[in-house]
Length: 92
Image (cartoon, rainbow, N blue to C red):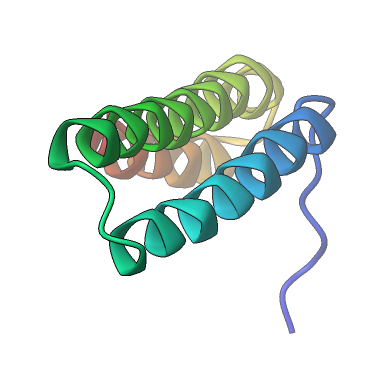
């Protein structure tokens, strides 16, 4: 089992994602109810932006805190953190 990994931004990210999740469910209902494609597309765009912002916040928070901690770590741990940084930037 992996260790718990929490940052100060995680509660806000969770709120944003839960809001987007509810919004996405309402979009499903809009489609089922035959709402106009423009309305649906606008709402999908809003959900997409919310998820993208949550991802960006998560990655930036990780970079800010985890890399800062790695600077004071032993060489092997710094190397692991550097690789993790390279891996996470693929998702920006």
